[in-house]
Length: 414
Image (tube, rainbow, N blue to C red; front, side, top):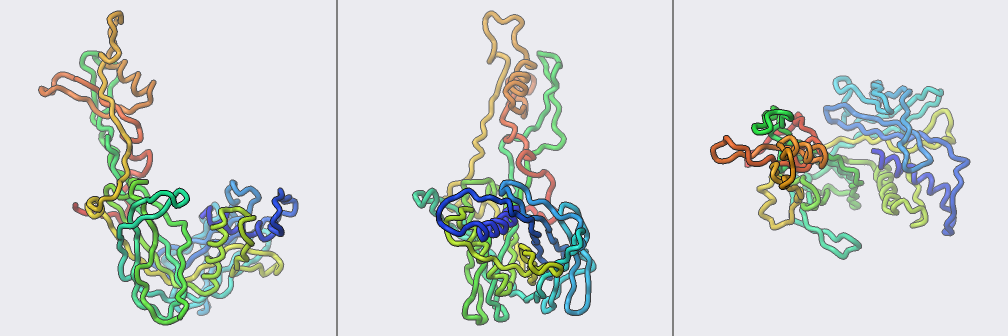
C-alpha cells in the first residue's frame, strides 16, 4: 500500500516538475498536500477498507494518515453505509450491514475535519466471470540485465466466459508453512552441577511457522474485441524456487479476479507506466493518471487515488513440496550449520580449573550469539558428550514468521 501511495504521488511530482530534459534540482516551495484515497469494495462477504492519507515531499517518508474524517458509501437504491474509523487513516465497512451487489452503482463520500468534502464518481459494480482453475508450470526468467537465467515456476489462471467483460485486474495473497532445520528443543540450566548439567525440554518448539505476502504488482489485461471470451493461461506471477523457503514445505496462493471499468483500467495502466520508469522523472514523459474522485467544496483541488468497485472471483491453489521437488529445479537452502561443543574444545594443559559446561554455554550463547538446541549423549544415555548450537534464525521460526496457524490453513498429507 505504501508503494502504491508513493507511485501516485510520484506522478504528481513528475507532472509539475518535468518540463525539460536538462537535469536540475527541483524547489518544492509551492508544495501542497493532496488527499490520497485507496478504496475497494466487492461482492465478497467481508469488510472493505478505504485508506486515506496525504502526499509528502520526501519519497522515503511514510504518508501521513488522515484519521479524522467521516467516510460513507451510498448506492443508487438510496442506501447509505458509514465506515468505521479504525485509526491511522483506515476506515472499514461493517461486513454484516454492507455488501456490494453486482449491477448496483456506488459513490464514496469523504468529509474531513477542516470542512472539506470529497466524493467519487458513480461506479457500477460489474459482474466477473468465475475462475476455472489456478495452476503452475515450470518456467524461467532472465535476470541481471538478461545475462543469467533464473529457474522456478509460474502461476497461471484459466477463467470461464464473461458477460462481454473487456478489462480485468488480478491480485493474490500468498501464505506458506516452513520449517527451521535445527529447532531449539531444550533449555540449558546454567549453574547446575558442572559434571551433570541440567536440561529442560521446551514446551512449545518453534519448528513450524507461517509467512505471508500480498501482491504489489499491477496485473491488468484488456480484451480489445469485447466479445465473450475465456481467459486462458493468464500469467499471474513467477516464483524463483531458490530465492525463498516458500515451496520447501506447504504453500498456498489465493488469486482474485476483478472485472474493471475502462476508466479504472486506464488508471492502472498509467500508474504502471510511471512505476516502470524506476522513479526517474527524466526517463520518459509523464503520464496523466486519472482519478475518479473530486472535491465538492473546491473544484480546483486535485485528489489522488481511485475508488475501485468490482465483483470478485477468487480461487485458492495449494502446493506441497512433493509436487515440485521432482522437477529438477534449484531450491532454497537455509545455509545453517551446527556446532557440537564440549569443554575439551577450550581445554589446555595449563588451565586450572578446567572449562565447564557453563563455560561452553557462556561462550557459544552469550559471547558468540548462538542458540543452544539440544544435548548429545552416548548410547547409554547417561554420559553427556556434546551440546549443540546453531544460529538463532535456524532454531526459532518466529524470527522470520508467525507461530500462529492462519484460520483458513489446512495441512495436506504428503
